[in-house]
Image (cartoon, rainbow, N blue to C red):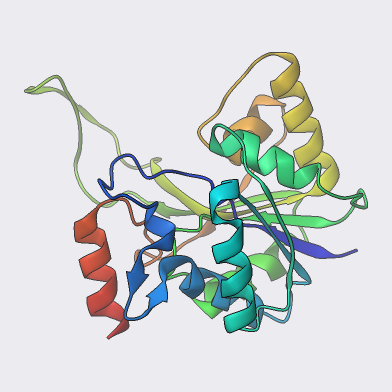
Length: 224
């Protein structure tokens, strides 16, 4: 049984308003994705890394692999139209064993800690499906320019990555989604749609996804 990380990196970052996708923007001299990959490279529980990406950035990713000695990157493959397609391409890129562990993590979540990654992976050994998430702390409202209703936050979570699954579970969930032309926002949605239970593992607030340029500024301040 191996543990393989799929880091989808095919997004164009439409909300980022940049000529290049956010995961390739340089922060303190290194592309953003480098910070993410470094955590996975250094995790003793990760055996292999697969990166689905836009073919225009294959050369850059290969150079990043060489420059940073990211030896665990085994494949840089063509991504899909959307994240779901990219992850599926990763699942289809080699012959996995049914009990392999697949961990999916956003390229633009570079502040995942070593502790969170390792703890989640250790927990996943007792679970077929696990998602990192943080419990809502703020007041939640439903709105259409003005407040319509206040929502009960007691059972609301903000989903993050990594999301960790046994290969056979995740593959079945993707195959069912393809059969029904179902697109979800993340892997946990596909897995629950397929009837599997997904366990929640407590995340960290600093493990946020970089979406806007102000997020880049926050990230730079934190790593300084």
